[in-house]
Image 1 (cartoon, protein in one colour):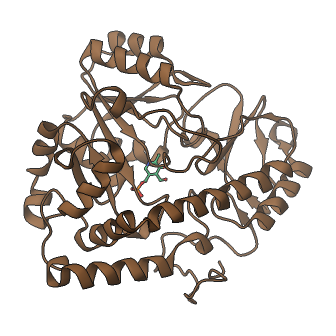
Image 2 (cartoon, helix red, strand yellow):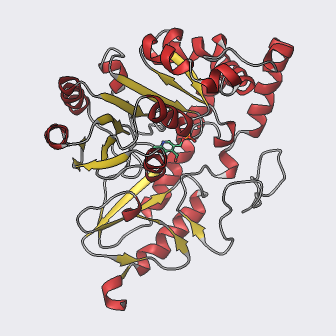
Image 3 (cartoon, protein in one colour):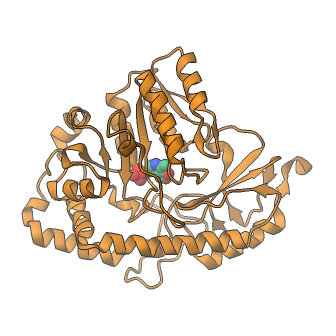
Length: 376
Ligand SMILES: Cc1ncc(COP(=O)(O)O)c(C=O)c1O
């Protein structure tokens, strides 16, 4: 993959350095990664420089177990909570594992949406938990189906894992009334909700509803935030928001007592971006970039599918009545990776490629959806 054009870094992505490099001959709409040209190398150089200048050797010590106060204070202000409710994590994957390790026992059940972030599910099953899919519609998980699942489940339900804003993989946003209904069911059954809000800062068309954590009064919900999708995944920086008691339990884990803050120097660098306004300016720019990418793909795409235009995030979800195969020039994520449903589906990430390449991918796909039944 080519290095980013206008920025000052010149190295190409190569295996052994990054998690995955797309084959040069295809347009890769598979992974939920940012286009290399959207990763803010110069902004981060500045932010790390500012953090080191301001905090000196304190930025290089073991950080406060819960996370450095300047970061937690800035994160809390944005989230409408107190810094006592914020715990710095090494991203959402880390937070999810930590919650699964501390608030669940082997063989416990986690209820997930019919289609759910597959690698999030893998974190849960690798921890020894079982996931159960709950029916969803265009507004997210169905509250009645959630109630039925909670009544019918014979194992202990450790928590409900939801991704209500710009959902991976379907792109949907759960409206406020549905959020309240889901919270009401969870509270009635006394079950914890884990709200994965990886994409919540990436709205392109209008406002997003309040988080489920806010709607619950920060009671019974743990909200997971990450900078992987808004700044860069290589930062490995995120945080969770919960009631102070829950935070106190989590922070007593040996991971923090031994290692201190999950990502100390990076949290100070990002605190500087949050405080200076650089993060908000970057978000405004990034949203416009993602919108141009989404539109380039959608405007050039046609075929025997239905879709809802995502109002934010990274993903376009196409629903087909039958199985389809995709031409070899374009890589997509098969819907079955995320769960089973009627018909078939594919997830297209518009985050990783330029608008021109996305337009080209749209044209290739429009001309060549192949009903796989004809060919098998
Ligand atoms: C819904 C969701 N949660 C979490 C993650 C991973 O987040 P992190 O990089 O913070 O571990 C992703 C990345 O694809 C995601 O889509």
